[in-house]
Length: 314
Length: 295
Image (cartoon, rainbow over all chains, first blue to last red; front, side):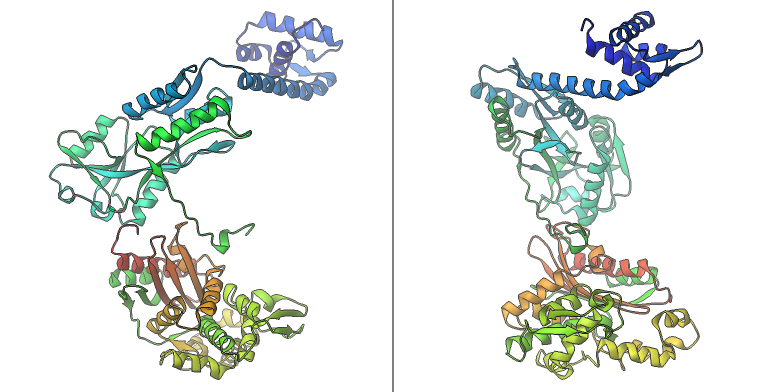
């Protein structure tokens, strides 16, 4: 076959889906005349007309309809070939997604520890939001992601779930700040400020449910676009923030919560399928180790008592 | 805290009675905990205790087969009560049906084998002076029909709002029906959880059955936490909605609860009343835990 079949079929599917050469050309990022030429060439190659073109509209012919499903199927498989080839090939770097706010010392340790284990393989760290990492893992453009939970982990395999206890960030001198350790119920009557970015609705729901369970129902929940705004609301006494232990900014104090009722949960994730091996297995191992030692994250115990009403096939 | 719990009952349109006790510290919370209340299907818990006490004493064989012939079922909406054909089942499996889905036919088959006098003897032996079982599920149904002058439960429901009707029903009167107090029922649960109601192996079987109860709408609804085990037994009779049970937290905290309600409305479906049982129970448990380390 003389033509680049995959490239031409991409054009065919785009026109068949848009039923409009101009829109299909836009979608493919090309001009309309070469698109028309490609379709003509494909029709010639296949020996059948794919579209009826009138001055007003474009319609699929019977052969076009017949070939559309086949074309889609072939494009899917071609895409998979590329993904598999990319995975199987020797890459010069490993791509790791990390949370944007991962502590600097942890980032450094991640790079340094992996360098000790695999001096031949540089790490490419990509700081971004968990939702971006999820997309990149699905696309095959990320090898391992360090994800914040809860998030949609379908199609992924997860490393051990690690937790960091959250504490309360309060204005220095406020009544609850007087105690070295707080109960969440001591925050009753305060508003809560949460970061807007990277806080999925599921994560916020989880946080609020845990707060309520421990006796803290915030008067209002403020979404903050930036850590400085969060700090401002805390300093003003408008709201408290629930954050992992951080060096407190002047005028604020961080207090741990008795019994660590709130945990920020983090784990490594990679595409489910074959068990990880080689450099990826090393990377998962190093990342989990560094998060435990450098970020002081500890495995999250998770007991689920299944109730009959939510039991198997209930 | 008791005023908050009473507010929960009031907002749900029910009169409520509650007793909650920390099984380890003995701390307690009560809302009219010593008043006499109608057990309704909660009577199946004293029956369960008596069954396993007799089994442990050799008075009956728990794996003995019972035969439930077709066409001879006690009124009820669950379990073997709704089945059409002959059922053969061991006594302990019938006991399991009577606890997990409140199967009335199974309960009466167990009661027939245990004997009503043994149920009340067990209560006396456990020091429960104000809890008594006066009859079977079938007896209760017959009294309802006779008092109301009707022949089927649907008709009773449709006439329940008639003036004077609920006052005529002896089944709703603790003085004339199986009865107890919230405090005595948490003592009964405590005895099951402390292996005092029967030998430890029998108590473990009772706890298993109570933990397998299917209903999510009452006690369990108040504890929407994956790591908390809720075991219980409901009781439902017209506008009476009850549940007794034990809630166990991952840190080892164990709380026995007995919640009894009587709705002002005669609606058969009353989800707010069901949910109030769970909410009241959670408020009581929160009080007992003092918002401690891992509520």
